[in-house]
Image (cartoon, rainbow, N blue to C red; front, side):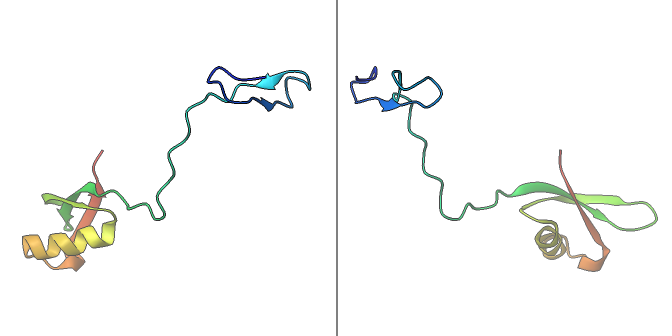
Length: 86
């Protein structure tokens, strides 16, 4: 027996021995070896009695976002908070 694409069909254990599975489905794309984390936009606040918004940066995790914001906005990293944007 052959499937719709003309290739030989493979047996399907759920349909019974006499019926064959249709193998004309699209193949899946191979996944990359190491997926790169996507940079997320994070809002940066200065920690005080009331948090003050300073700006936004694009980084994959909070610690690197705080380091980048400290360099960019000339504020000590210990006084910054990074919050993921929604």
